[in-house]
Image 1: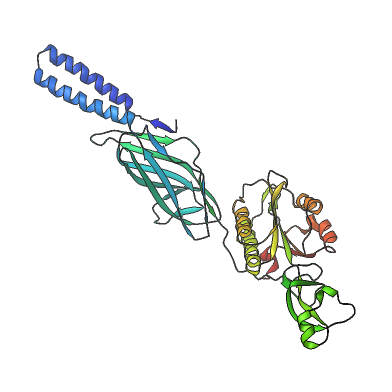
Image 2: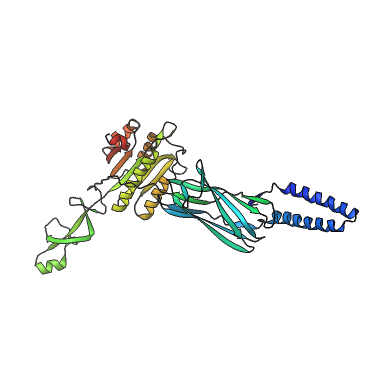
Length: 384
């Protein structure tokens, strides 16, 4: 059963019905028919109230479809709660939801208790009716917000008494708040030793699909590079000139481990990496991301393989959003060792860590394989 009923007043109602029953028999025994009629009316009212509270909400269905909405820091979203009622109507009810404070109500009506936000919503639905309750929220901080608990208070429409329904299954609605995007300075330099898509004046590779002119033929030119139409016009063999290309790809290896927990400046570090990812996205640079948070799968840590584009950017921001201060970490040395064996180093590698001693072995080894940069925390980089 999806809803758990909490009817604390059921025993009192039974006691009242029993007491009215005794009074009815006493009235009949003393031939007090007027009093008996009044008692019968009271029994009918209390009985109908008990019947309504026992049956109200029994056929109320909450559409608990898995839903994940993505919200930018400070952006707007909403909880969309859909209910279908196949039973008795519910009038003047009150819906209570508790959700984590990565998002907050837009109208500032909720009450905060620790990392939970409690919100009361009016609830009315007729029989055979489907309603949707939309709760506008705003991204407050990076993380994942889920509805932890939901209760529905159903009052009796014509008298005293109420029943509380608690939704038992796990609610599958989520709000994923992306990190705050800062504007940190970031530079990249295409490598002329690997083919790619960036125009570079001095490169070893040409793009055969982008001819930019012609020149006189020399004996070392390939036959398939001759521009025949230009050769006829010039009455001399002409060779095509192509734009020269270079490759630029990056790896961001973030260290969030500190002893048995996470680093104290976790949010600042994640915002820094998110800003670098945004710069790569705007420039069309391919990048990979590794974070030493334990994960199940082929990679024992959070890892996003190289890629670019809008979808890759979304996956990178989602990976950064799910990191929590309570996440289980892996040693930075173990992650770098696994990357050294199982991943190909790109043109540029950034190690974001304050513990350079832990990565010194790989710093010495990778310096000859990639353009390596070690980035400590911004407080350590920026002099006071």
